[in-house]
Image (tube, rainbow, N blue to C red):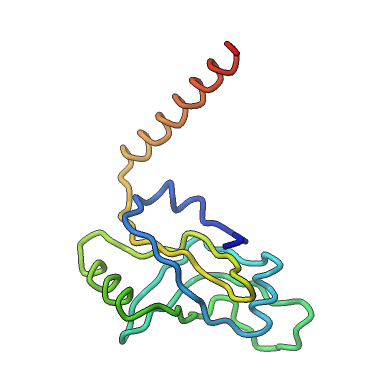
Length: 148
């Protein structure tokens, strides 16, 4: 999958439990806008309603050359998943403190695919530990590089 945009903040704010790849239903001008990278995954989430998964709050800017007057950039978009995957996601959503978030969007051939994850929110001390371990890794890499 050729990645177009990724949700970098998701890896910092959430503990990723399980990942899935889903297709996404887009209109013609939306897919053209996605290919140019005019989208934002920040604050987006997935909800399961009546046996279907929907992506909500993902902003896809209007394609500038499209002749569409009443375009809603934040409309909910349906995700294409197997029944088995939908059931697994729905069962996990019943657990306390678990949510489904988009991680990245990319292209596979001519189709847009969305990598989604079942995730649990990190606490403040967990985020501090992540920052601390990242800083330690950087200093260790610098020391190793200076000795070479």
